[in-house]
Amino acid sequence: MSKQYLSGRIITPAGIIEGSVSYENGIISEIGKGDAEGGYYVAPGFIDIHIHGGGGHDFMDGTEDAFLGAARLHASHGTATLLPTTLTCPDEELFHSFSVLRNVKNDEKYGDMFYGMHLEGPYFSADQAGAQDPKYLKNPERSHYEAILKKADGLITRWSVAPELEGALELGDRLSSLGICASMGHSNALYEEVLEAHKHGYTHLTHFYSGMSALTRKQGYRYPGMIESGYMIDELTVEVICDGKHLPHSMLNYVFRAKGVDKCALVTDAMRGAGMTEGKTILGSLENGQECYIEDGVAKMPGGQAFAGSVATTDRLVRNALSAGASLTDAVKMMSTTPARLCNMHDRGEIVQGKRADFTIFDNDVNIVAVISGGKIIYER
Image (cartoon, rainbow, N blue to C red; front, side, top):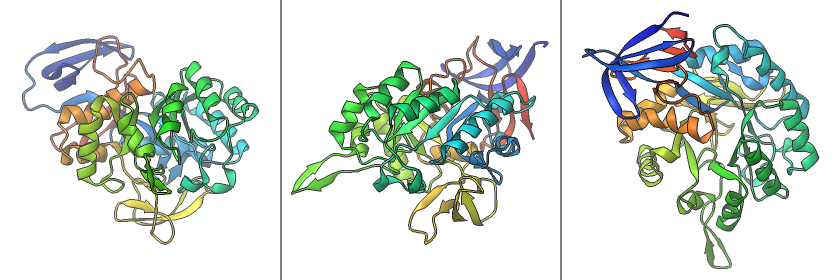
């Protein structure tokens, strides 16, 4: 493939420069300064490490059409890389999703978007299940998670687990040894349990503030929960659903400042309702999923007392981060560089010579103009 060029306001680790970036064979070859006044922003490709679907599709539907349909919707909103995320489900459904992912990674247009899988469950606290189907919850037994790892055969990039469950610490050691991001979520763990889990390879907190314990009282004494642990243990990284619904802008701003943008990633946690109109929808697979509905820009469980996931897209996350006080470079970092690093995606996430040619191009209002993944144009306005 011949050398390709992009010009504009390039968002690099050193800041925003006016100039151009060249790439060939899917790899960034050169970045140079030049005249690009008034041009579009050229950012590292947005990376969504927690996403269930979109455009009327859920990855748990278990079809190539669902995977590619969701990818198509999110590419049009800025996403260059995504981690298809599962829900608690029967093992057969989970194993089938691995087969589908292998196939769609070979798709000519959207295949390069799919990096690996994020397993959300089934090892969660029943008290913090949220929208996860409780009938599939279980403790992590070695024979069970080893069977999953064998079926996945290298496809798992991150795994969210409640660390207080019996067997969870051993699982953390195993995931860490494989280079899989071991994340804590849907959990009632207290500080001491989170601290111990961190010693066993757990480095990240899944959808910070959602589905996790907070400061609690027992016989008059107060015990910090997982939320407080996220601040108390400096090394832990976090992710926030930056849709403006799960956390208000004031709290988003606090997380950005308290944890720092190098330890905070933006995620959509989007379900099939992303990109769709308000009304009834399904979280999870069409066959085994749970009914919910979209209202006021978020997915809600029946009765409206709990969220079922978001309907956000990555461009919306960046705009919300800006509204919450982040600078443009910091908002982009939390949508690209930080998620790449915390999930061990060493080949992407920055506009740097030798990295993968992933770019999200947008205007002053973060309206997406084009998206390039692995050197291929996957969306163009």
